[in-house]
Amino acid sequence: MMDKEEHVEVSVYQKAKKGNYYCGDSYYYNESENHFICALVDGLGSGEYAKESSQAVTTIIAQNDQASVEQIIKQSNKSLVGKRGVVLGVLKFNFLDQTYAFSSLGNIGVMTITTNNVKNRNIPNYGYLGSYPKQVKVFRGKLDEGMVFIMFSDGVNSTDLSSKYFFDKDVEKITKTFSSVSGKNQHDDTTLIAMRYS
Image 1 (cartoon, rainbow, N blue to C red):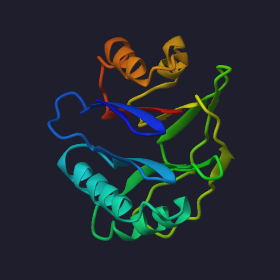
Image 2: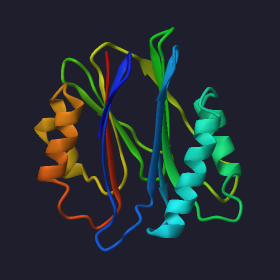
Image 3: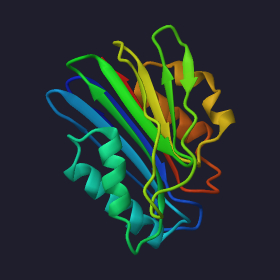
Image 4: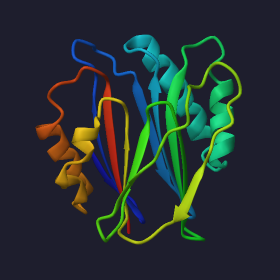
């Protein structure tokens, strides 16, 4: 699926774990006049209950998408009372001051690729949401035109991420190539979101 907003192009690949009807990963993205937000949420385990938890969190994020990354994570944790836990990643672009901020928890990863083809991959915060309040580190950086951001769940491995097709500036090509090259052996729910700032 490909979507072009004013500042950000987004393409998403998602597939449930082999043998499952429900994918336990959910995602949300939205662009407004001054910002863009993308969140990827992976419910612990797989199947219907994992999907229930991940969708509960994406609903909270959609209702609070003007909030800071830290506030979004705090609100998401509150929404999980009585449900399975989740791991998540939240990425926000601020168009006014040309910055981005992200934080990820558990096995949700974020990789940036500059226009000079320099890849940087974050180290997620340890743990998951749904147990007790979490203090998380938020990484902040300068938003440069043409930067590509890749957000992914644990169905995407390090070998996949080292592939040269991630240097492509066409986000739809990235997700289509991932689908044909790496998306065949799903031993876990898999979501890969490619975003390009322009």
